[in-house]
Length: 385
Ligand code: SF4
Image 1 (tube, protein in one colour):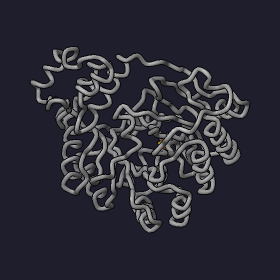
Image 2 (spheres, protein in one colour):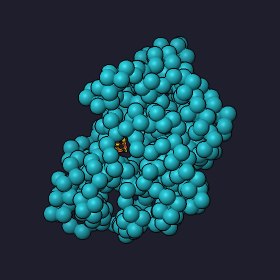
Image 3 (cartoon, helix red, strand yellow):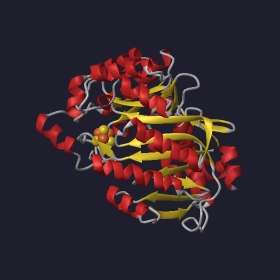
């Protein structure tokens, strides 16, 4: 089954560390964008076929997840979300139990709006909380407070959402191990079904870098960052949120079905500006600019670019690279059989030092990272890229 990613590139304000494909909210632009998005979905053909852009669409493919990501998808009106979901239903064979996620910023919703999102068909809310400390939120340029985030989580429960995920950012400027662990405790108190913990990554010209220099905020030493990660995972595990991926924890049965497609060699189609797709061994991405995207779609042109056919070796390496992100690791015998290469024969020698170090475990047929190995994941995965 396919996963469908829908990109919504609008934000109420721009955070000082953000490097995503987004821009400031503009109502008229948003209205035109939603129309273009619906049009792109309606005309989605089988992209792996050479005739992808010609003739009537191919018969519907089956899909079982929709993920509204951004940007800030919760800036859309619930009726717009409903109309986009309807476009998906009209074009795809959407599983009746499909997971439909809406990334939501706490300041954009109240209980009534969340109820209308629920009625529109959204059944999973992913809140960008980032921190439960107001000073940290201000430093990041976020415009909500910790109390607003807590209220939004309560509102989501009251609106009937039984699948709520929270994003937290770790290793923030000026953050100590103690303040981070306070954040983790606050997350546990908020009782989500799922949580994602991300390390702050500062791209070269991020405004936050300058503000850090001006204000004298520094990042905790690497060893502290490692302690933050390991202790957070232990606390969350004790609270019933088991780690299933390097950055993700969930209650039993509540792992993100959409994101699992990225880590289990699945297939997905992305709609909207800058969205990526991978299907039948072909990868492509849509043009990034919002206006460029709208004008291509409305003039009947394919917004997809950079189409690349992946070789069997590309696909195997990517399956290994992403599969190792999972706590259960990857069945390397099955992956090797799928792509016609014996993984152990090919990579065993390079992997051996990591096994000796205790970063990797080879539990035939699975290969997985230990928690210590997850801290060194980039070094281990470099073998496959
Ligand atoms: S809300 Fe998210 S996408 Fe928008 S600017 Fe902030 S970090 Fe970037």
